[in-house]
Length: 336
Image 1 (cartoon, rainbow, N blue to C red):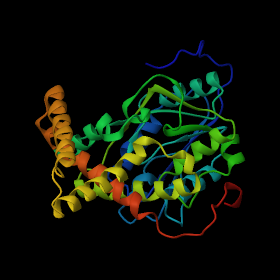
Image 2: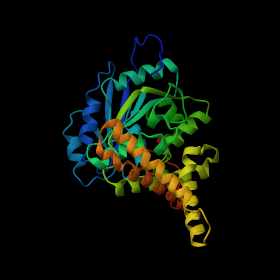
Image 3: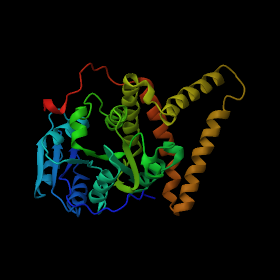
Image 4: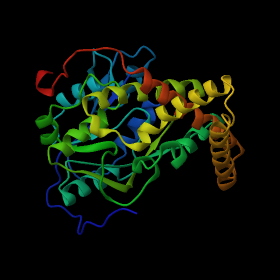
């Protein structure tokens, strides 16, 4: 449940900028913008989309939405798109929305109320993964499972309060400008890294489970593997810069991959019992899939074990491989 913060009526509502990076998001950008423009926010609100060179008709879809400001993102990446949109916006509060996400009714209003009531620098909630086809539904189940994501509140929910990170985020502009925005060296994990800098600077990142945002996960195991490979690679870059930021849930996949590799090697050398750890893992993920299928009465969720294994192995291998070498310093908002 969400926290109670006392009266929520404000005399003056701060101006809000909703910022959205996108690149080749024609399949989802329309739903994302529909969700943003349907908000009932009482104050001034603008929407800024930063396009990273889409070639699939994304910009044509955006152009059909009156009042949405489209800006270029020549670098093409998510953090550079966020910084470009923030630099082109003017709201006192910055609401992040991604092209795969759909903000529910009342989200912006509720988030600003929580931001003001708690005094936090950033507030956010749960990434509510929901699928349409069989594979996407299985991926959504895996992303909402403790077996899949550990103790990450922004995936599985929890009590309202300070957190290490949240999904998307609703920020005070002053905080973003003071910290220089998102680190553009990080194609992934740039949100976690920014939240780490907020916390290290004495600020607060606040989780509220009532702030649930619909998220459409990848619709194929190949796309899911690519996504989690990138997550692992860029987490390695962040851990290199911030060793103390590593959580057990993030260390588990590379440990698992090394462990399975060690078991296979031990089996090749004739060691007894080498098959026990991989078999135990297989039983856990299979049981998770069966449990999800029975709970939701959805046979498609029997594919959940494949999604779980894809997430764990791809993330672990990506972490072990590490990110591409890149010595670029992060570009700051003041430089845009």
